[in-house]
Amino acid sequence: MKNLLFSKKLCVALCSFFVFVIVVKGQAGANDPTFNSFDDGTNGSLSGFNFVVRASAIQPDGKILIGGAFTNFNGTSINRIARLNVDGNLDTDFNVGSGANAVVNCIAIQPDGKILIGGDFTNYNGTSRIRVARLNANGSLDTDFNPGTGVNGEVSNLAIQSDGKIVIVGNFTSYNGTPRNRIARINSNGSSDTDFNIGAGASSRIWALAIQPDGKIIIGGQFNSFNGISRSQFARLNADGSLDTGFNIGTGANQRVFC
Figure 1 (cartoon, rainbow, N blue to C red):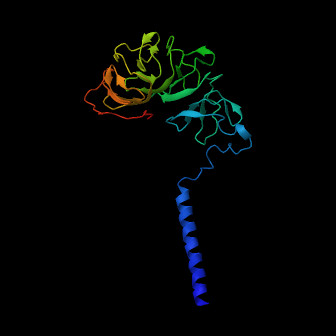
Figure 2: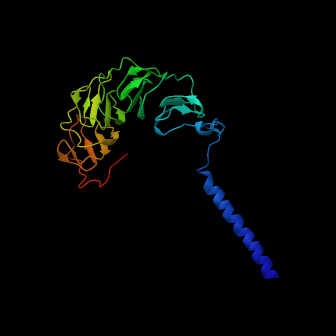
Figure 3: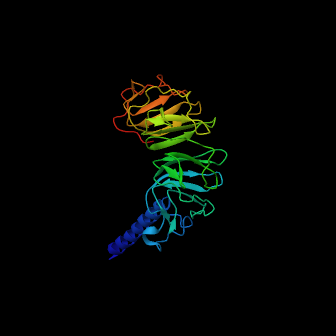
């Protein structure tokens, strides 16, 4: 009888221990109920975003820019770009009008608060902007940024240099009529930077992009060469767009690089 009683006590103690361990481990991944509290399921399929989110960026004031293929957030019509307040609810002061007419893949915020977007859209709020655009801080189109005929293929990613110039990558072969194979650099007014000399560029799509503090540019994707030199899915460029041959990846990656 004593052994049975001891076994029961031991079982209760062990169960309590394991429950405690599970609860403690679970806290790190717990949902924050104060963020996006309107997404409580009452809107059915319209709760939260109604389709895929591809990009996000956090403003200095903590507000969050979201881009993707969605057309609705928590029951409010919003086309492919939105701004959320710090609590996760829609910022209605961010007025995009009819927004982008197709997917927004990437977002970057300039130091002055203006917003760059890239993707597969061809207009923003009814104005022609082919796959790249700049917005004012209130969500309206910045008409001082003029990309002309824009990009002839999808933009996957973009980044802002310390001098204000913008690097874009993707699946395109020209920017505003100038041959640019999968990577281009844009001046702050939207014109092509002709000093950025990539030669033949990348042999296939570039997905990933990062700029080092020294201005060199890291790219990743599904290419096997850059300007005719073998580079399997991953490469580093000098600030002028030429291949950095001192960055030796050997045989490189055997599958595409996304980030």
